[in-house]
Amino acid sequence: KMRVIFVANVEVEAMDHAVALARKAGEMVREALQNERSIMCKSSSVDLVTQTDQKVEQLIVSSVKEKFPTHSFIGEESVAAGQPCVLTNNPTWIVDPVDGTTNFVHGYPFVAVSIAFAVNKELEFGVVYSCLEDKMYTARKGKGAFCNGQPLQVSDQKEINQSIIATEFGSNREPEVVDKIFSTMRNILCLPVHGMRGVGTAATNMCLVASGCVEAYYEIGIHCWDVAAGAVIVSEAGGLLMDVDGGPLDLMSRRVLAANNKTIAERIIKEIEVFKPTRDDAPMDK
Image 1 (spheres, rainbow, N blue to C red):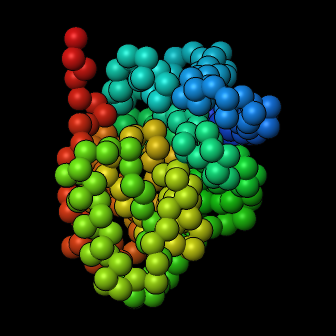
Image 2 (image 1 turned 30 degrees about the horizontal axis):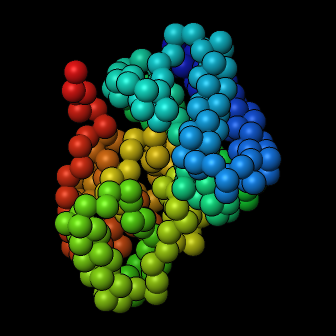
C-alpha cells in the first residue's frame, strides 16, 4: 500500500512539473515566433527551428533531471542526436519539444509541446500544450482528461457519414508512400464522411478527438513522442487507441488510430492502406 501511495505521489508531482514546464516551453515558442519571424524569412529556416526545438528540449531535460535524477528520457532531439529510443520499466519522460515544426517555421497557428510519462512501459499521464491557442490539455490514468481545467469527452457519433476524420500527409515524400496516403484518404472521403482535417501536429489532432470535435485521427509515420501524451488524453476522454491494422497500439510502431468508439475505428481500418515505417526502437546502424 505504501508503494502505491508513493508512486501516486511521484506521478502527481511529476505531472504538476510537466504542466509548469509545458507552459514555460510555450512561452519560449511564442517568443521565438515573435522575435525570429523576420530572421526565418531571411536565413535557413531549418537551422533556426531546430535551435528552438533544442532549446525547449534542453529546458525540459535539465529541469526533469534536476528534480527526478533517476528518471529516463526519450526526446525527439535527443534521439536525433543519436540517443537510443528504448522504453524500459524505469519511469520515463517522452517529450516532443515542438510538435508541428513545419507549422512553427511558417507561423501556422498550431504548435504543441507534448510531454508524457510512463512507468513499467505503461503511460501514466499526458500533457499537451497548444502554445499559440493557450490550451493546456492534461490527463492522468484513471482521472479523466481536461482542457484548461474543463473535462473532455469524445464525440458519441457512431455514423461514419456524420463524422470528421483527422490525418496528416506525413514527411515521407516517396511516391509509393504518398500514393498509399492519398488512396486511404480517397477511400475515407468516399465513405462518405463530413470532412477530413489535419492541423499539422499529431498531439493536437489527438486532443481534438478527445474534445469531441473530430471522431478519429489516424497516421502512419509519426513517432512515439508525437502521440504518447495524446494517447492518455484520448483514452481518459473515453476514446480508444489502436494500430491502423486493428491490433493494439504499439507506441514504437509509428502508426496510430485514435477514435471516439469502436464502430468508427473499425470502419476506418477497412479503408487504410497499411505500410510499415522503420520502428522507433529499431536498432541504429553503427
